[in-house]
Length: 99
Image 1: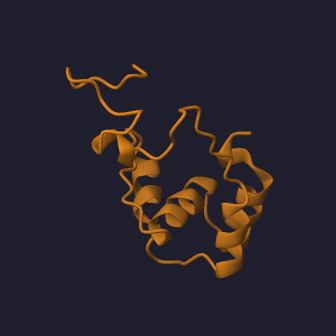
Image 2: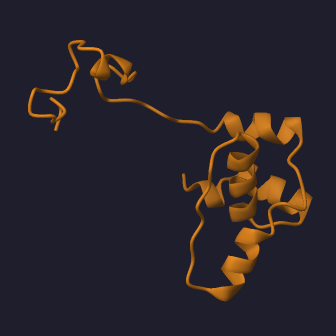
């Protein structure tokens, strides 16, 4: 499912009178993630800036977090061992062994 069209996101957007894109951007911002939205359309640029005047509730945040479908297909999803000489470390040439 496309996040912008997910019913959970659409419902939260309607409740806040915002667009689904604004809800997703605000979600990331509230998680402390740096966001770099971009667009060539003036109305979308204005929408992207208009995410500071509202805040998602704790309940909204919980609902959005349930949509996380992250799956790692690497044998070691934690890259820390890549820098510490573990089995998934970078090669002597500096390339990841999975590349």
